[in-house]
Length: 230
Image 1 (cartoon, helix red, strand yellow):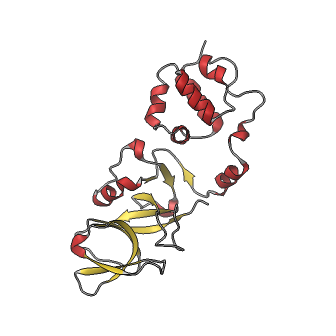
Image 2 (cartoon, helix red, strand yellow):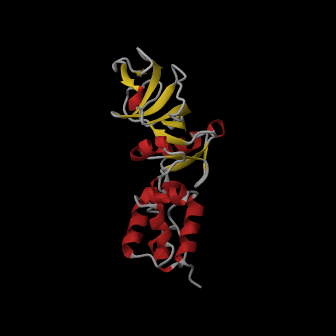
Image 3 (cartoon, one colour):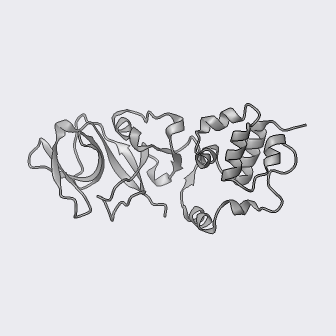
């Protein structure tokens, strides 16, 4: 009996030892698209997309469900380069879909800082991290720019906990993610020239400190720590 498409894709993910989200990201589609593929026979465009990303997967197996999922002259290990395998081994945190701390996209940061809970569509969440040291964090974001180098480099992932704007007080010198009229900023927060202002300080000396009124704070989170994937 021919296997269902859903069974075939689940088997493929199991052998590749990747999550559905990782599979979808590799193919540049949403996880929801992969779920839809499981419900019907794979079309030629989908098969071409899979084989292009995973050349060791048998096209015949994808089309008919017969035979072996991988071509006889290819090993699954060839899916990753030696460098990619090294990176995978060096990651010291575990990742588990739909559990842990969500890594949210840049476009969702402002909303996540304001809400009582992270309000991001599942398909937009880039990854889920399970990091015991950061279990009280609400979300993770990816650092952009170089204003906080060398402490936080472009591409680093920081774990954050939202801070309510009611009865606001700061831990001076700590790093915060701040939603302002200038956008979302990652900065050290220092005491301003008066009670109505705070000073935003970068690690990179090329970026000069500046003050913003507390009335222009739209959302706030304190940074708990760093996940660096080299």
